[in-house]
Amino acid sequence: MQSRHVLAKTWPSETGDETVGEHDAQRHEREERLFWGSRMSSPPKSTGKQKGGVSFDPQLFLATVGVARTITQCPKDYKIFSQGDPAESVFYIQQGRVKLKVKSKQGKEAVIAILGAGEFLGEACLIGQTVCLATATTIVPSSILRIDKKEMQRVLHEERTFSDLFIPYVLSRNVRAQEDLVDQLFNSSEQRLARALLLLANYGKEGTPDAVAPEITQETLAGMVGTTRSRVNFFMTKFKKLGFIDYKNGLRVRRSLLNIVLHD
Image (cartoon, rainbow, N blue to C red; front, side, top):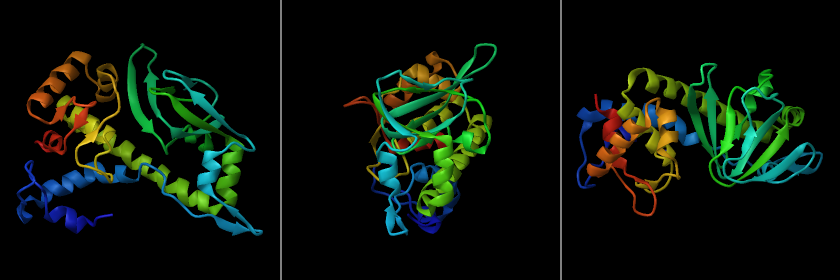
């Protein structure tokens, strides 16, 4: 992981030929605050520990069925759980993507998260939440591991390697929730859309600067950003004209889209 100092010193221009000086350090600090927390959105790999001569492997635990663990192969638009259902299990996304959506008593809906492979959902049951506060729906065919609440609690208490994997993930999700709140309170709908696209394309993680975002509809983007579908369409057209995104082989998000997020 790069240090804060390195991130603050250099920044490639859109052409990749220019490096700005120290006077732009504040800009880089803003970028880091927006995206640093998302770098650990997936649980880190961890090695097993010895307990009574038997090695516990967290990755194997999350990849297989067992005591109080089942795997479901879910088609697109499959409801894993609904808002108001009893909160009795933790779910782990082995493959695919899941949308979390909430609905108010007045019928208004909002997408509060898009989760991918390697992420958990439903973990609030571990701290006493008795009902699900959102509806979880697959947006692509997905493989979902269901872990009973008591089994999850047991493993967290007895297997340190699993706790070392799970706790950093939960903390990073908490940081992300704070970032999302700040984004909603202080940024324009255009900036929120740009940030949502960058996060969906895994900006800030290892990989190429120009990443392909998953197949997300404009309606879903509108629910994430908190605006109308027509406004999303307007901004997407603008981003394409400016060269920030294109639709070759899917939706490709370019690093230069960050200029919209950081624009005052």
